[in-house]
Length: 402
Image (tube, rainbow, N blue to C red; front, side, top):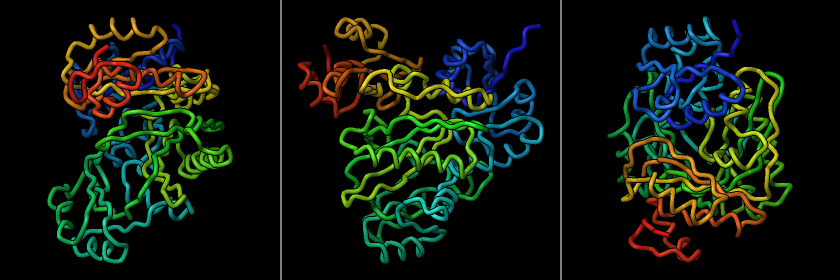
């Protein structure tokens, strides 16, 4: 019988969907543990189990079908992953993954390694949060240590009167672990950056630094390479990402999200240990995509080249809005520019929800920015200005038509 690698993916979102697409050409069998049969990845992965990833028995039964387990998200209980490690290969392993799951542990570990981070404090009471704000100076940022995602579980606090809010809404426990509040200095940042590194047991590669634009905690656009970033600074950030991956023992993708402050500092904001939204450009924009390299890494296969296929790649997320029929919208998008790459995730359209992304590659930034012509698909209010710049008609805030 023909031998195939069997990769199990926990989580049925678009990241799992794109991991499966990267696996097809390599003859790799992907199996999925999804939250529902209608999830983005479950629509395209035949070998799907619908079940609860917080239930150890469900995880164990699923893991028995796989050679290695990896993730679409970071919400699987750390204790369950430690139990699974005795029976199946888990990559990234729980000792590494907990630094993406728990912001308090991440801050403490990175600071101990001398990695540049915002000043922070671990707070279990309102009083401790107020004390940090008084010492640091308001405003400050407060984050739940676990469970936050895409801007959820994050507060900007302007004074002591607002300090109770994070404690009123945070859970006491998430995935079996204590949830605390991580207080951080407010970084007056000029822009946000991201570095994608991929590490196997014996190799590592790193992609060019991307500039990212966030709105309401959600990524809306990336530009690669980051415009105006000196080569020496870019190389230093790439080396930093590789160092973090090695120190934490990450296997697979590590996304290092950074903030470039107006005072010149560049500090680490978040870590993710899975394919990342800021690396979607790599499907068309790199010799080997982040998804293909993640699959290679967890199987301990030689990694592919992260070299760019063109000088510039721009990726824009498709965020749900008034336009429900994205399939019909494809006709207009492709008629305008046949070089655009469109990825739709099969998700029901809801305002602000990530339902796809579009990538354009070009010889210079101005050429690649033509992807903003795809505003017909988006909900992003920011595109109003960009749409006018490329000659589109803006019908209403957040909606533009060719």
